[in-house]
Image (cartoon, rainbow, N blue to C red; front, side, top):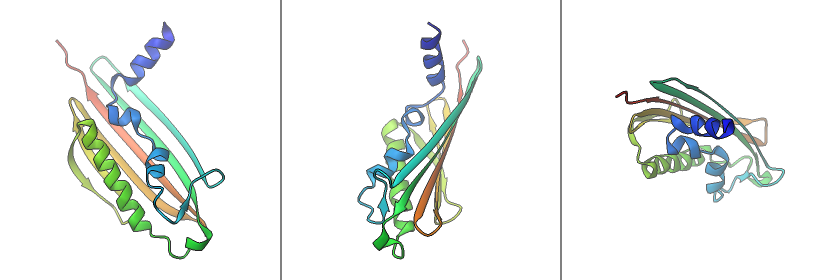
Length: 153
């Protein structure tokens, strides 16, 4: 009983976009990107989340990191801007499929992007950024935050 409540309560304030978001899956959807090796031995990820659930609102946060090895023959010609643009397009598409309305978007630089969105009574922000680590690794980070206001009758 307690486990069922925990699972139900955990997802009470999360949109379907938030609950299903996976940086690993987002990157793997872009397998066509020729410079990354995210297969066995090439990719690694870590993630975590937290939430606050009150009687009138909930706050949820999720952070994920995912790293891939740059292919040896593509280290010099790796097209970071192309990868970030493809990931941005996929996140925008996924938000639309979930029914979210994008109210703002932008980027701090060419290696990142963010979307602010609203879905029913949920306000959210998703930000994805990437950077090169050493000579032959590329790491991506995603941060998601959502706040849901409950209807009180």
